Length: 82
Image (cartoon, rainbow, N blue to C red; front, top):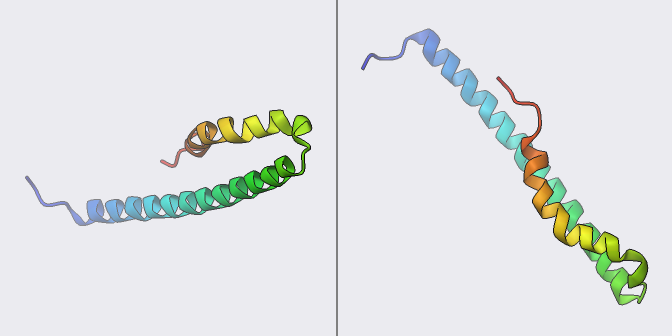
C-alpha cells in the first residue's frame, strides 16, 4: 500500500475538520432539544397535577410518544455536507 500524498492528507484533514464541526453542531442541537423536551414534560406534569388533564391529553400523548421517535429523523434529515 502506498503512502498518501500531501494533497491527499490535506483533503483528509479538511474532511475530518468538517466532520468534527458537524458532530459538534449536532451535539449542541441534541442538547437543546433534550432541554426543550424536558421543559415541556415538566410543564405538562404541572398541568396534570392541576387537574386540567382532559384539555391536554392529546398534547401529553404527542410529547410522550411522538417526539422520541421523530428526533433521529429530524436530526438526520438535514442537508448532507459533501
